Length: 180
Image (cartoon, rainbow, N blue to C red; front, side, top):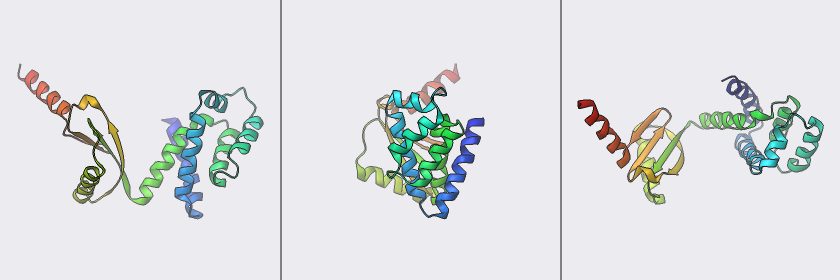
């Protein structure tokens, strides 16, 4: 919880700077790219969070790697985390920034989990209908889970709509055991 609060403070400051310069989306994509690059290799991730490695060495390597490839705000966010020995917060800072970016666009996260892949048309029709019903815009994430057997499970924030075969079987099982 403390890390989440601290990460939110960093993300809010970065988001404020990005908003002032009208580069909110660019900073968001650059932060995601930085996080992905660092997480892509176990040795790189270990190097990044290691307290034994001098901050100056980390800064020099990060500048050589990312300078000119990402926006200055994203790069300086990364360097600030290193200078403050808060490297482990990077993942949470990026997540908090993404939430702020989503909120600024008026969008909410929507996760569609299916047993089998939906066609683009089916997915778009489902999302369009949900946007009309709830009068919201959604950022859609699609997941596949064969254990659902069939159907779809939709998660919108803390609301869950389970139209999967597995969900119905589970509900039926609970109902049968509740009667005994």
